[in-house]
Image (cartoon, rainbow, N blue to C red; front, top):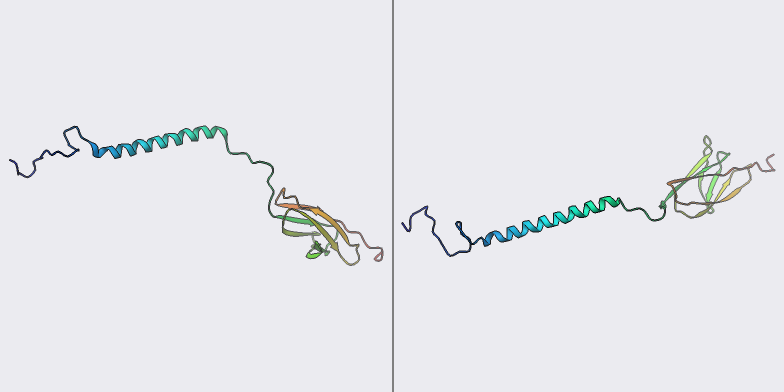
Length: 144
């Protein structure tokens, strides 16, 4: 019966179906135990950190770029920023918008024929995405 097909022969290999040596299963068991331990640590860590909540921001957030809305009592006035003309106040809403200004101090000048030229220092704080400033013009004495 020794060479018959279908018969199981016993060998001296470490893995045997009936018995004692299961060394081939050892790497699989070690991997499974390691994965379970990592998952356990991750669950415990997430439960502990959930109670703390999200991290709180330190200080106040400053927007890197701000839109400055200049409102005036006069439409059609030329608006200059630090000596360079950038916009004209609208005739309907008497305002102009300067886009993407970095937070710092600017010299805003309004000029229109028949009105006195006015320059105002405006500090862009970056506290919001837009900032509004009111700059009113007066009729010049020559126009009266």
